[in-house]
Length: 125
Image 1: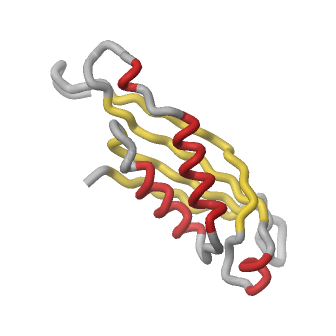
Image 2: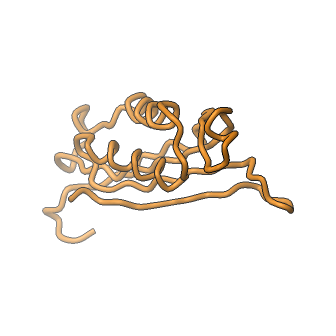
């Protein structure tokens, strides 16, 4: 951390949120929901050095915004999901920066694969 006048920065992470979403570029992916997993880390700026209730980001609100993005409509790319979540999360009060990771475990490839993942980091403008 820099000077003693800087406000503390905490990281809030929701890891392994699981949803069924219509995601992908193949025709059947627009119709049939499949499993995806999302991690969201939010860098939260406190108002001072002492933690108060006004410094807290409501986990339910973060989960709900992720769920809304993921389940709203068909999305072609994991990158789109990450961008939409990041944009919405950065609108939350106190959130300065986010890291969003979106994983798709059931990818049709010719060999073994645990999952495909796209991760991105964005900062408040």
